[in-house]
Image (cartoon, rainbow, N blue to C red; front, side, top):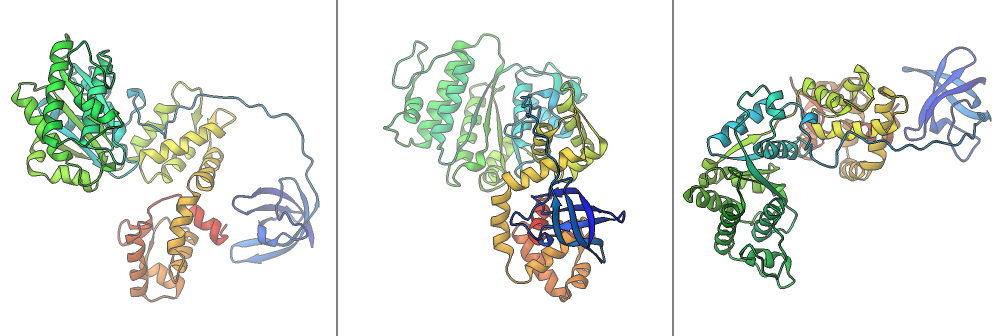
Length: 469
């Protein structure tokens, strides 16, 4: 045995490194700790161990703690700080919005030519953020237009109202929510079950807000909605050109909800009555409801479908920089690259990692250690149940060998040939297993017949499960 001192150790990962008295750093795994029930190490602990070697280098066996590091019981200082990253909500501040220049131009051009907007894409791609940016653009806020290089800035002057769908919502709920939001913007007080001095028929509002709720026929809801919207706008508006309606997260609605028919009827009724500056912004994950709208022949003519794709590295760098601006906190280039590598070029993971990295930062510089802490916290606390469920479906048969080999590789993506050579499985057998993992949404085909994990943080969980350093 030789002596050493613990240089680093993570209880989450279950491993670290020991500086041996022979000048060599030895890998230390939790499974090699003996002589204590806690099976953990602290930085600075003096230990003895058996030095060993394998293909990866030196590692420590039979690690025993001789003396613990002295701990300074200084009182910790807790300090609240305003976090600029907002993974829990859409970006509504134009100064923090990044990228999407072509999508913004396409949407503005479509609305300028009397079309409505459907924003679709996978979860975390930034649909709601773009939808709210477009909503505020139509209210006359032009900062983002200027930043995108669009010179025509005096295009819209609309009242804006919005409704975020929830599972179980009906068309009546949506109609009532939009009426309520519009009245709120115009300082019109609505009280379910009571009359109003503005002469508004509260049938829809009451139907959605009372215990005696009864589903309304689509034709009745549509007629009441369009009539009341036109009445509210014409009698209580003096300065605006039109109205922009945002309906967010329509993918949460039941597939049977006649949202396409409602939108078609409302758009056509407003146009027939010469309310040509009334626009609908619809946002949701590509799926049953969004496909129903996009594929409905009549609705497709009235809506421009903006299908969002991942942001570029440069756009994500701009996103991070814009959020840190004015906070007094900077970031290293390596830290930014590390955040992007875990994001799959989706903005939501960038917001999530940035949020916890900003929380853990203590020196005013987001560095690789802050990102590492953030990612580990997310995997251990926010995504662990999701990953456990996912792994539980995959941990049977030869899936495990494929997953273990993929996370053990030093390459971000691997080929079927690589996996076959490193698992001993036949080429066709590996291809079949990968096909199953693709169907489960765990693996995706990247380029040149290479395969990688869809969720960049999932391999961190797998390394923890497989005890891979």
